[in-house]
Length: 226
Image 1 (tube, rainbow, N blue to C red):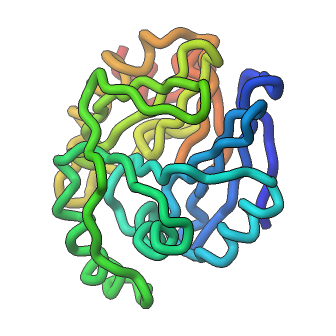
Image 2 (image 1 turned 120 degrees about the vertical axis):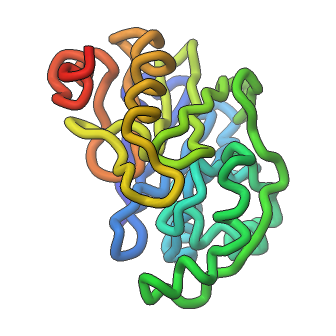
């Protein structure tokens, strides 16, 4: 069931978000929008596309883009189908994950996921680039470690980030998959995410969101590395 929520800043005047848990992985497909214009993006449509389309209708928004945080099957399994249904471009992740997008069918087969399709992104994203929803601007941070091409979307004005599977509430992304590196992941978190500021709230790819400050203080993977 889709769950509508404010962005962690509670700044509903400017933005809104709805989390749609999809597939057996319970991945947080996120619909994020600019409130005044109702222009929206779908972040990481991992599957269950009819469920995502229903949530879009429920939110009353117009989706203009699909954003991907990285290339793992649970985050991209429905991307090609959703792109065709909405006729919108896909942006992200970093090009380092492009091979994953080209082997979605093979990855899906390992988890019994059928109906998925290989695809390529319409725009791969690099560190320092920006993407937009209506009048909202998000900076791109390349944060490898969970996967080589993981990116984070950060809006400075809202003090909000979508971090994919880089950082979780009380944990960090797994690094035992091909291309993963725990050392690289922790380096990305310490050098790219912690400097954003303790007041920055975030949504992530699985489970509840949190804030940079909360994780800096209590996340054992971070406190143990500082």
